[in-house]
Amino acid sequence: MVTAQLIQVAAFLAAAAIAAPLGRSLRVGAVLGYLAAGVIIGPYVLGPLYALDDVGKLLHFGEFGVVMLLFVIGLELRPVRLWAMRSSIFGLGTAQLVVTTDSRNYPAGRNPEFTLSVSNAGRSACRIDLRRHTAQFVVTSGPDRIWSTADCLKPQTASALVVEPGRSVLILRVDWRRVRSAPDCPADPQRAKPGTYVLTGSLTGLAGAKDVFGLR
Image (tube, rainbow, N blue to C red):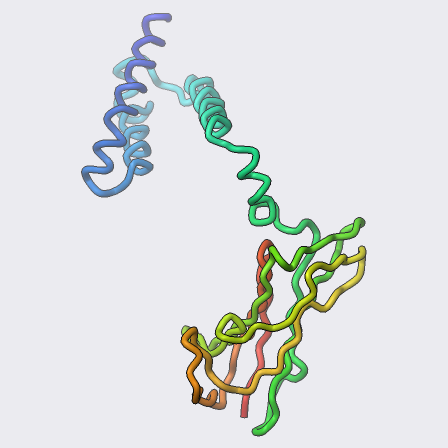
């Protein structure tokens, strides 16, 4: 029994040592290399040759692998870096973004008004530091990026706000002049054509929200 387990361990280590370099040399990646090695040395291909005929016998090896993976992650983890990235990793708790337009369809000569708000569906207040979390609007038409507040426009927002449970707080309101924008700030921007557009509002640390409107 001990001899069979030693043979299995040797087979696993040899497969792991060969799989990653072989996967990289074949340009399929180390992950697919490990997957292919597992199929080959598993109980349905070569496993019966070294007394491996049941997947259940491998569970203890799999659990040990997960433990070692978590241990390696812990060795590489810097608490200071994790704290600095807490908003990107954990988000802003129960806060949710709400994007609205003041109309579904805009006749010629009427400019759309966009609003971005944060609602709190939790039981405790949510504090948002807008110096660290950037609010932004982007208007698209299919794959075409039409306009963004990140291009030349610097909308004024509060430095920080507190959203009480069950409440919603306005973060950003912008009137769009129905023109295209670009990072180089063109002096004579092109007018947006009539059609259907998608407005996306985003805030660092929260999932973006969308709304659809039309221009005539």
